[in-house]
Image 1 (cartoon, rainbow, N blue to C red):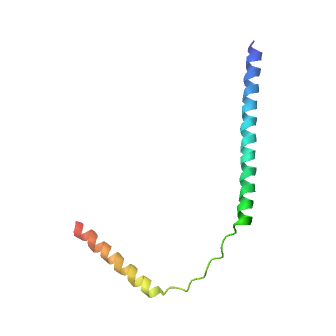
Image 2: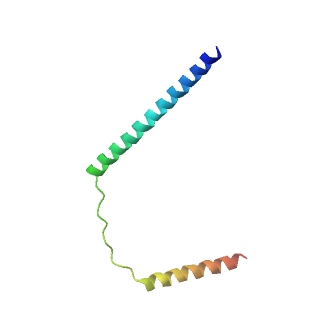
Length: 77
């Protein structure tokens, strides 16, 4: 009886692992197929090159923001 019970447990384990492996394999294949379909029918748009922003304006703005944040922090103390 012990061998039969052990054999049944092994059979159920292998059957369950086989089903999970098959499901995961189908999931990977299905995802790959869907990815190819989406890429083929809806290609990504080309990025539009924007003119370079002036660095000094951004630096001055960032400096003002940092300064205001430090002042506000010091006022809370």
